[in-house]
Length: 73
Image (cartoon, rainbow, N blue to C red; front, side, top):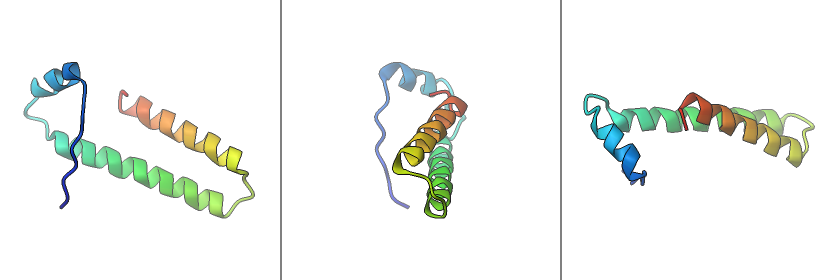
């Protein structure tokens, strides 16, 4: 498995350290997987539709906003 370095604000790091029982790597891995899956779904829909590039960008923005909301970002 590959490694990725993630930079977070110091205050977030301190909060994460308070919960050492949480597998943060697993949490981030799942979030990345979920986000990628949503992108793939959007791409599949776009490839079979008559959406314009502008429509696709709007859909992507909404998906990203939803993901951020769901993950407290």
